[in-house]
Length: 366
Length: 269
Image (cartoon, rainbow over all chains, first blue to last red):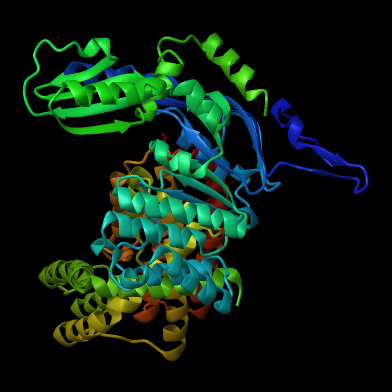
């Protein structure tokens, strides 16, 4: 019997003396790091010539010492700006990348050993990569998947019917993948990822590029799948709505480090105590003091965007409607990059040491 | 049926379905495969006829016709092209979903290779017949030569496929691999006897070709089928060398694959 090695998992170890066994977390990541070596040169022709003789490389620390645990049946959201290390972490956990250092076990296996028994029990959906055969109807790819994952015929039929019903896929099954809309294709990608009944799902931006209605449907579906089958899910997304709808727990990653690991409510309170109010005006309002109401994020022609404290959103809205000829008004959560950037003082504003201590103090309670 | 066999047949069915979607393109590829030996035949038979005795290295017009006719068939059935493919898969990141499956991607590549050959048969067999009718090859093939020749074609196809795949794995280090495909193709042309019968090459080149695997993919099965190898022990020795090269290639694949996968970093983010 092996005890989890990372400190953050201590709470996940529940000794039941009457059963004399220890429950292990399903995913256990300890001090995982990945460094890429990428060639680098200045722009221009001369630099291109120079690089032939003197090739310079830069170390890119995509993931630096990440540790966390995930319990069976949990949905965890990975949040962070582009290049934060979310996808790299998922790729390591799915076995696509070897880490530079650190350890991880998923379902009791080391992912990057790529045992076929392990690969059979997981699924990774990459929103920007297709696993479907471009020129054939989705059904053909599904059948290949069934053969590769050794899904018995009855079970395949049953699961496919269920997934087709849940994802409303009926009308598109017989169409060539390349003729489908992005949303339809994404639903097919989700369907094929789930056909073998994976116990762990890594979803890398599953709603990228699809319209809002479709995003909501995909979200509902993922939540439903988790509830029905108890699958453990790690999800990355740029859309806060994906995370708020699905994840009780979020892990915020920036520059390869965990900045926050905890309950979503704590994150929203901590990171996004603001609302963004956008208004379209019917007439010019030169001289109106928008800055007195909140931070002016954008102002051009007759469109204004204001950031106001959450508590003041209602009163500011009322005031704007009373005092100005408002054509249209929306209140939104600020974009996630913005939220994270503000809460942690921006990527450049926080030194590495500060980032580490933030991760420890907040991640430590898990 | 084992898991690999089941997956392989599923890949094969899918591969054939894809090929049927691109009938026009695969016919063009097949034509390119026919033109190659046809042009070599035209050049060498013209050169032979310009000689006083009408032969080069023991090949007259009829023998050249037989050799390149056999090479047309062998070249089609034993060809492999993964050195051209894998670089693209690695560069575009399309390799990632393949690596996530619980089966080695080489099985899908092998099924793709076979599905092309199966799908194009309906087109190339009539073309082979037409070529034979036009050039009237002189065959002197007995049943045992034909039988062993067919086995040699299968072994040559396996050898070329695996070795080509091993060379293709370099793509995990240098994804822009088009030149590797050309280099490999060039080696097949020269050392494999696709451009000229190996007997027509200078001694040193012929000796060098014997040290390499390419001869055993193309020249050897072709010479066996056209009846040029008359000693059964030489034929069996050739089959043995084919098997040995296959074993070396498989060992090479197994050794390189795990290193290559470790090296694979896809398009990171």
